[in-house]
Length: 616
Image (cartoon, rainbow, N blue to C red):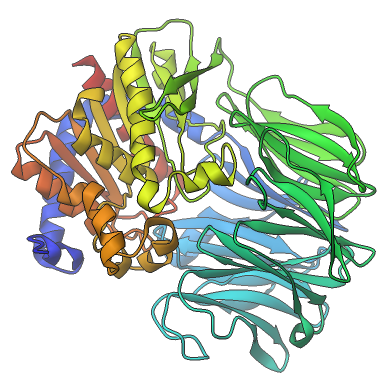
């Protein structure tokens, strides 16, 4: 099929760079003064000290914190070990910390960071006692698991073939010690397969899960020191995740059955059901002492459940606000949990038989969080959250995603608070394609069923419009596909559209960057049957002359996951038909964001666009 803007996929083309410069200037003229006025408020909220993740060690708890425009890795009650600002001084560019891990003794720390927000970055390993750099790895690796004499890690091949000759993108597991590195797992696995490795809390077992896309899993188990003896112990055509190994028995959370999640245990090939499926999805589980701690998702909000090792339910904890709750780390004796809600940037809990609050941060003000349902085209009930302040001026900012088995659960959006304070209502919709109601809910929104996701979103937007709201629709990444598809199908259900870092050209997504790994979720454009349903909804191929609301497409020049050309090409197609479209390309941002200052400015621009377009 003819693509008049295919040349825009070349980001080194001077014409493309000139276009980006012109479009950025045009957008800046549109939001300029308003964005500058709003920036201090968003920046203050974005710069709140927020604990993102944690790791338990024998020397204490390590945490990664976003605070005052920098990211740090530090001891929970003590010294800073890594500071993004110091990295920026060293490297002369913006730096984004991506994550960290440490050994159980608290002697070695591995952390990864990227420059300009790219997915691909640098991994450093340091000695925690002396502070000295042990090793630097370029490009970055993930999933480091330390042993006494070395460490395991996963390497993602983006551009070059794997050591066993497979075409990229693909993942392989390695072990590295004084003698060098060697590939230990993953040979023969092609594109679309991901590998994640975990270590049992007693330190003896390797638990490896191989997933194909977001749809099926194989679990391998064996001695942590003998990768050549790891054996497959479980296989399912649905997602599954190993939890831990207790007395030689592996506990697994699987979506087999109705897709709502259950815990099983396997020993010597025998499968025992421990926690059966319930009415709502079981999202995660960890073993702490003689208890299983599990997170259950009830209408997209977490409850905490406590079970005995043989599956007897002992307790249930419901939080004061709808929220998200995830385990950050466990050593088998205690677990660190992170809670978050729309007005609570974080709470840090510890569980060692009882739940204790370690630390929290909340936004002061009179906020109300409520829930409602809309009816989709086929009669499916679609849940959504509403967050209001003291007044309601009938302006709604609606966030959606709907894909990749990802649930949208309550979380803190710094840019939403100023909108709510000004009489706005922030809405988050739980569409098919996510994991909000289990694996069947996910599958009802993938591949040939993708239109369901758009219909779900249309139902929520349409209901709000019918209630008298002016509506801004917002989505990012796969959510950018959601909003762009809804925009070309039903522009009448929104008064503004915000489309971030999006996937839009559904006939070429697999040819750009790592797009081929999304084939299990979206389908294969090179397969005539898949191409038929992809072409039917592909936003890039369905732009027609009609009345469009003001639309903002935003992306990052260094996004190496979703190619910026999706946004750039789509903006040109919309311009062709006279749509009021704006393009914002962050020149120091990748798919995962950028430095706090740059990210705060981007979020402010989104807020300014919503405020300006909904007031019009």
